[in-house]
Image (tube, rainbow, N blue to C red; front, side, top):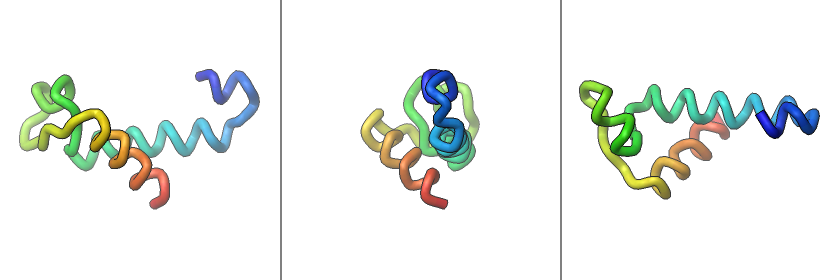
Length: 57
């Protein structure tokens, strides 16, 4: 929301899409993995890395 407020729409879209794709990959933190069947629990740093990886796709 902050990026959109600043007018950085493209950056906001990259972050939102990266998070969505990271969640879809099922490599998520414990709060998500407890709610998702077949998910792999990772730490916050690994989840951040997954978001960055997905942003570049």
